[in-house]
Length: 340
Image 1 (cartoon, rainbow, N blue to C red):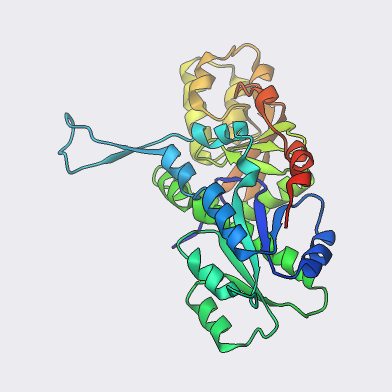
Image 2 (cartoon, rainbow, N blue to C red):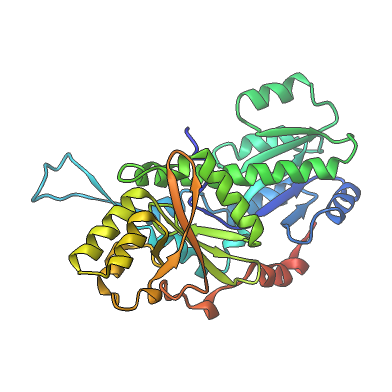
């Protein structure tokens, strides 16, 4: 399966640690960051029960976003069209249990009753990413399981700084988990627009932007690459992104509405861009006061030029902040629920 360079959304997710050694689990979890959501199990059967009870397949979001329907009047019954609703992506911020989604499982190879490989085989049909801890990384069965895709990563348990290596592997696989979830949506968005989410340079720019603004979770809002951003306290901002096609469309709308020459110049050059992501909002603005709808823009280069601006506390999305559970609050509530 082709994975996009970056996902359509990302939020902190939960890691399961499964090991019959409580001592190892205690030592490992003490070295984990306070910002990581995780659960620990010293029984593989308990972990399986919890996984099958609470697990949510990562294609749930694409199923919500993509609605197939038949237009019996306009096309034969064998033809299907697809209605893509990106608004359902950032609606996920109202789901208080989004952080409970299990994206990665770290499981020990040698456990009584059920080995780590047997555990991974039992959940092979689930897209959750699997890390196997083993004392002998080059054991034939481990390599074979990796090559067959039964596990996504294996780490020798007795190496130096094993906790650091595990944390790095978790972060990498969590990213892949959301990329996998996003594959269908990105493929469909790319049909009608420039595929900025497949642009490695755009992905690097976006990661740097998130790091600079302490972004904890993000959600795609349009096909040009605009994103709703939240930090760990659920403070909102929005990265508005426009490409040349967007600027041309905005320019034509402004021209049709007899906008001032200065507005036309700003839109044509990309010096300023609208503060909202959809072009229909531009038809309702007060053209005599461009400061209410235009923002100074910067440019980042990739497969094409992307013009962008960051808006703190965006009002255009009508976000009900009081209904959002922040990641910080979630960790505080669930910290005492971690169990063996």
